[in-house]
Amino acid sequence: MTTYQDPACAYCPPNVRACRQGEAGARGPAFCPGKVDPAAQSRARDLYDDPETRRIAQESARVEAEGYCRWTRVEEVVQFAKKMGFRRIGIANCISFVDHAYVLSGILESHGFEVTSVACKNGNIPKEDVGLADGEKIRPGQFEALCNPIAQAELLNTHGCELNLVMGLCVGHDSLFFRHATGLSTVLVAKDRVLGHNPVAALNLADSYYSRVWGADKPAKPPKLPPAGRRDRA
Image (cartoon, rainbow, N blue to C red):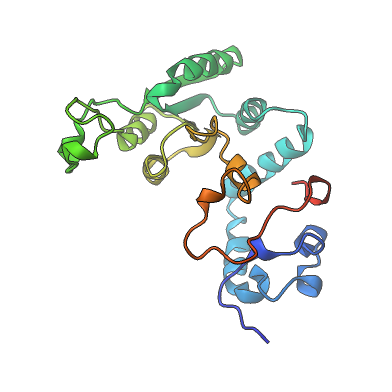
């Protein structure tokens, strides 16, 4: 019998996924989180006793139920912020998304929120200042401003943003933003310049058009998504 050291929910068969029916203990595979590391699950469960954490969980679930397959993500953000009683919302956007941030700001303000927005190139720091060589820039020989997610976070923190919306920050830059932001944060747009900001397309087509995503250790029979009719609905 295989002994698992880490949870592996990604490998749960479509006809199992027993946690959705409250049957993980009885029907779940040996790599279920509750079987591999029940202590971590128990610690996490205890954290829901914190009143603020519990309220966030409650309002998130209410938004999920009320807007299920009806509300866009923008509408979900608005309703979640209203249920939480938030007043000030921050937008941390890529400089390429300023026009979208403008529309989003207007939408949020139309619902009575105060909005603070900060683009990624704020501070106009030369990339050389963090040790990048000229040849490591997108356009060598020209000035290129460093993306500055830490300043985005600090500015939104300082200006009292209770909920932050990330719009198109690059991979890694978004990680720095999340590390330094003190308010709740969620992603509105995940950047993918090749796929029109729809990263899941690379997974949907990993066995065909985007097979290049595989590494050298690609399995002989790589996993693929089941037919749409057999996929679970969140």
